[in-house]
Picture 1 (spheres, helix red, strand yellow):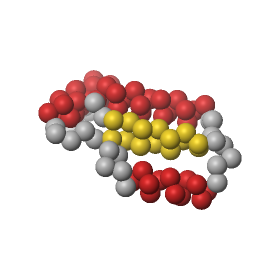
Picture 2 (tube, rainbow, N blue to C red):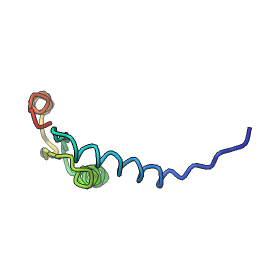
Picture 3 (cartoon, helix red, strand yellow):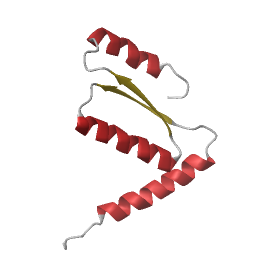
Length: 88
């Protein structure tokens, strides 16, 4: 059996293109919600990249930014509330 070299970037680009077409033809616009607590730079970059990907695909994105000193209780109420939204 011979090895198969795969181009991950090309495959991902092809898949994104196909997904964007499916979303454009759909009657339902999918949504992604992110809760970002604090100001960790790497987390902010990660979330920004998700927002960018959503925009490219036609997915609605919502980011809830909370301070670093947010309580666990607040996060535990925020997440289920987002899950109940029709647009998420």
